[in-house]
Each structure stands twice: as C-alpha cells, then as structure tokens.
Image 1 (cartoon, helix red, strand yellow):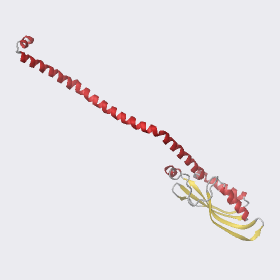
Image 2: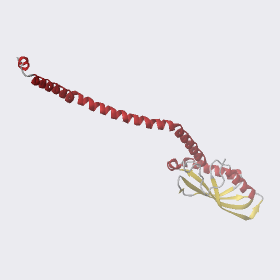
Image 3: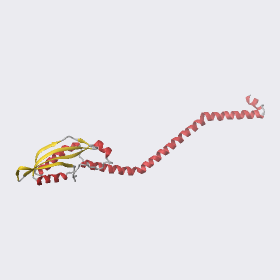
Image 4: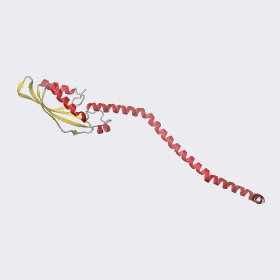
Length: 209
C-alpha cells in the first residue's frame, strides 16, 4: 500500500525520499560502523608509528652494542687490576701476616707491629701499620726489596734508622717506619672505576709485580 502511495507521488518527491533513505542508511553506517573503523585505523597507525620509532632506537642501540660490550670488558679488566693492587678488607689479615713473614725472612727482629685505624679516601682506605724492627742495614734493605715485590701496594714512609749502642754483627740498627697499605672499597670503586682506572694513591711507593 505504501509502495503504491509513493509511486503516486511526483518524481521529484520520489527522488527526495530515495535520497533521504540513502542518506539515513549512510549515516547509520558511518555512525555505527565506519566511525569506529576510522578511529581504530587511526589508533593502529599511531601504534605503528610508535613501534617504528622504537625499532629505530633499538637498531641504533644494537649497532652500538659491540662498543658497549668492549667498554664493559675494559672496565671489568681495570676493576680486576684495581682489586689485585688494592686488597679488599677481608684479605687484610693475610697481608699483615705477609709483612710479618717478610720481616722474619729478612732476619729482622720485630719490636713493634701496631696496625692503626683505617683512613677513608675516594674509593679506598689507607691502613697504616707502625713498624719497629732491629737488625742490620742489609736486613732492612732486603725487607724493603721483598715488600716492593708484593702484588699489593705497600708504602713505607716516615722511616727513621738509629744505630744501636750495643751492636752485634747481626744487630746494628733500630728502624721505625709506617707501612701503609690500601684497602679496596667495592661500592665506591664501581662508581669511580672509569675515572680512577688502576689509579694509585699519591703517597704510594713501589707497586708490586
């Protein structure tokens, strides 16, 4: 009945109705489907651009990765060198025993061996030991020579040598000095490794081999 009524309308009216229905269908399609599709496409495009940027950054990092790995390897080797030169605190008793043994091997008699308090520096601590021995000049020179061959840094300072009044062939002098070794502090050294590579304290004497 509706079709018959529409068909009786003038042609212009029929065209208007057809156009209106078409616009309504298109409007519904845009509102319910196309609009969401466009928004989803824009969202995916934005995500794609972000991924492209991320990939570009990763490619740059990947290209530099061999350089980073080489730098890490160099820093690790430098840190190991630093550890060999400066013992961690847990190895300090062993180093003290070595010094005592070196004095005995050099035929020096130890009269005083007094470890002092730690002195904190940038990435290490100074560990002074007040040392007094008796023997001969040759014995004392032998002791310092042996000490210079230690792997660890040990510096002898404030040396005072006094000739004994009651001398014997094996006991002619009394020597006093401060033997200072340096203790590795790991937490500080890790942060300072690059800038303080195998850096020795300014007061350090002969290094070990």
